[in-house]
Amino acid sequence: MKYGLGVNVNETIHDTVEKSALAERLGYDYVWVSDVPEQRYAPVVASAIASRTKRIKIGLGLLSPFVHSPMQIASSVITLVETYGNRFELCLGPGDRNQLRRIGIDLSQLGGISERLLAARRDIENVLQKQEVKCAIWLGAQGPKMLGIARSFDGVLLNYGSPDLLEWAVDQIGHVKAQDFEFGVYALSYVYAKHNPNVYNLLKASCAAVALGASRSILKKLSIYKEVAKARRESEAGVSLESISASVNTRLVEFFSIHKHPSELNAYLAKLSKIGIENVVFGYPQDYSKMTVRELSRALRSES
Amino acid sequence: MQLAIGVTSGMKLEHILKLSAVAEKQGLSRMWIGDDISAPHDVFVSASAILLKFKKLHVGIGVTSPLVRNISTIARAAASLSEIGGHKRFTLGLGVGGLQDLRRLGINATNPRDMLRNATALLNAALKGETVMFIKGNFNLTRYRARYASEHEVPIFFGVRGPKLLSLAGEISDGVILSGPKTYVRKAVSLVHEAIRTSGRSAKNFRFVVWVPTVLVKRSGDLKLVKSTVAFVLADTPREVLELAGLRYDDINEIREVYQKRGIDGASRLITGSLLDEVAIYGDSPKILDEFEMLRESGIHEVVFGPPYGIRPEAAVNELAESWRRYS
Image 1 (cartoon, rainbow over the protein chains, first blue to last red):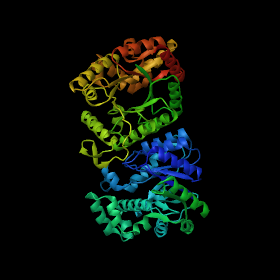
Image 2: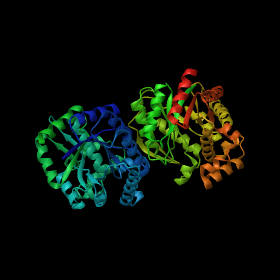
Image 3: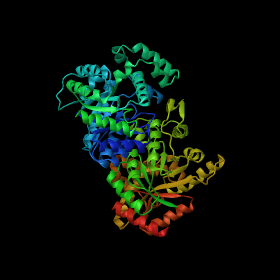
Image 4: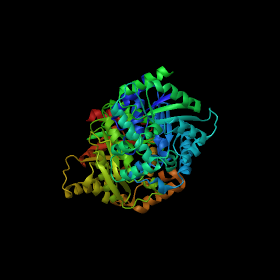
């Protein structure tokens, strides 16, 4: 199994680079750099990480083709590969609907999201091939529509942590040959040796944010549609995410994140492996501090 | 006056980094990177690579257009580059975009003056980490909270050409990147100065940059390169710039039509000696430095030695940079 660390581009680039360099020393396979419209620009942060590391693979994304054109996305990858070598991978997806709305992109008005994503994937692949650049293209997926097109990508990064949900998602995608396709998880995460309530609060707030951006079908499947719809209305009225997360059912943490003590991690990862998942990215707030990055590393080493 | 190097994001990054190494070694002021949107290289990643690899060299984007990228992307890319570069090492150049590029993308640049005015205001607000609410014209930001406030000031320069946009540059930008025939450049400087005066700003910190095709000529055969460069530049020069330069639109349009029908070689044959002198800076190092001196006397603070440089680009940059160092 391969392990990655999702780094938070809300922090200074210096801190992100330090934690990425630490992740490389600790033997992580990947760092993933997310691209969020209100935060730092992922390709530039990836460039800074690559300049300070040698081996670790750097994932770029999730990048939304509704924010950046396929040519712009391909250009970023090509420039990174030409500068730092062939160790970049890409994850595409529509992006967080609430974040996109704030920059003038309304997914509900666009229509044909799946078809547009597939077209973007093809266009990006064409530009990469012309430049003879190899780069795996993952799909970041959560709901049934995205799962329905996942097989057209090199792999899928599923955006939740619950084994039951993951098993359902893998079933939705169906059987694919292991050499053609990789199943992965990119979930909010807090694996702790000593539980820190501050980090846990960040995890809860992030789970609430993911739920607010989740598709109706997923929320209905989890039987949390009504309470999340209420939280969405509050959010649009300006209520802070922290207040919303305090009122939202703690089941969100179970659904959308990997929240484990090291003693539980072994069994959890074994479950994922049994489902066919061989790539796990531990997302925010696992990179809260160098200590939390090390705690996860120790837990993974004891697991292996 | 300072000497900078100009490249475009369409060039191989390996080449850009080699030229950057020359610029850093020779103590040149800055690398300007033009955003070639039809080329498979990202201008922001290229800028980051230079800022990370070199310690002194400043980097400018010269220029990118808010019509081809979401304004939030430009803001956070600029903030990220400024964070990497440190105090004032990064400068953001804004423009409307190349005529041919916009046409190819089906983008209609209606009211570019309002577009650039609004873009500048939005970028300045976002770079300060403000929450932005703006729905008008080309922009739609709703409760957009920039979480990347730049610790360092990000100067915003305009790369614009028409009189109205030059006037706007004098009114709201930190500097202007001028490109076009030499007569035009002199008139553009006056227009911008006038706008600075009428808007009540101080000209003290305003920077004038000139990016004119410059070719180091070693032998008479190199003139072919100068001619093809001038033909290419004229084919993309708007009518109002030609008129300000006192060039006849019909003459230039003929070059443009031949360029479209028969390519650069055909168009190059129509380039006269006086057009060469008006549009390009070329010759050996002393002659080029004399021309730079004339630009300094016109009020220019920074001159950009841009492509194609010479038949052997790297050697040309090295030679001119060395001459510049001795001269200055």
